[in-house]
Image (cartoon, rainbow, N blue to C red):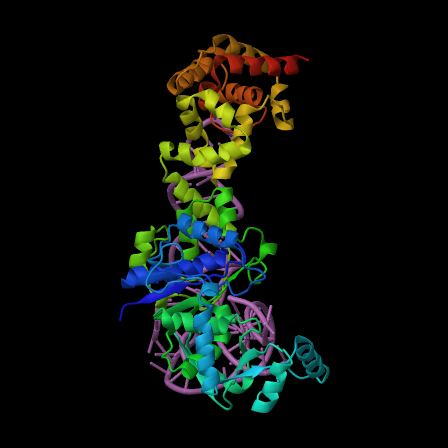
Length: 482
RNA sequence: GGCCCCAUGGUCAAGCGGUUAAGACACCGGCCUUUCACGCCGGUAACAGGGGUUCGAAUCCCCUUGGGGUCACCA
């Protein structure tokens, strides 16, 4: 049978980093097995679901390079792929469960349930639904209905049974049905709840493998019961452990950037994020950790998925991103960088440089970038007026510095020397000054940039050109003399 | 709290009864270098604890401890 997997986010927020990994694992498994990957929206939470989030999730998936064969946006044989558009389907199945006695209407109000919960809590017992409406007579039901009470539909959980989840990453996990209270499958407004809708959709869509986060493991027995009641063979399950923050708690907003879009905004490359995420909970056989999507597909296997939770390590992501940044050509970087330059407010300045000098600039800073948004920081050095920091000030006060700066100012080639020319110029300067190289370069750097560290001098000179350098040298000279 | 999952360096992890217990990130040191990075070389650092099983346990079983998840008219 052809493998069919799915990613079914609820559009109640942007695509979470954990969701992205679930999507990735599903994608990898589908591609590896020559199967199909479905994306659908579970938007039964009317309060929190928003179309904007659907759009954002789709864009995030596309940005990551995870394409799907069927589902939202692309369509397919099991349309629609949005749960609120499938309400009739759920109603039919609910009727079926009602008719076969697997489910019953429940007329308890929220207030009553709340009271029951508090009472149980007060007695030190576990809060759960006691089954008050389980055995209402047809008469009683008719009366309640006549009173205008809109019932929910509850699933009647079998007593004394054991349900075993056969999990591809965890092995067999057993749950006793007595620990599960009768749960709602249809809300009073006619919207199905998650556990019900997911079962109906997965079965109707022919999903063969459910790969999802571990937080769903405890829900699985409920789903198994539903499969049983519906007379459907359940799919295979694979529960992947959670991604934790530094404090070992489930990743949440408190931990900083948790959505894919935030990483995109910061200038992480999709290849890097995908590669990093893949290694969180999965390890390929070899020692190579930098893998293309294609290589990941080849190497992917569910039995190499780890059972233990993984802490999100920003340091490693940063390193990973640098690796991918290094793999980019200057031409590619020039384009990738543009939106971030714009964001940092340096678009005009970059345009004024012209393509050749922009390229030089990219070459000069590329090794410093952890992510694309860092460009703003480095551009500051180039585009802002000279501001001398403490360390640079100390250098400028050393003896002989004034002579070096003046010599440089007077000999500067121009108007815009090529990189090689700048290098030659600097060497000749050292020779003429008859000083150790460092005694020439450090003061120059301090005077030109106002800092003691930064991009290489030849780049600075070639990018700024003679006039800008002279201007800066004069400012620094004025400062050093004054 | 009940139920369930998990447990190898600071982090990600390999390991699936016999290894000097890989590798990567981070960290530290050295080299390179006109600075800072980059790069290269090297180093510190782990089987949570206790019982078993076995000739032999990181690997299998049990308990303890620790962490996490789940118990909604959220998904």
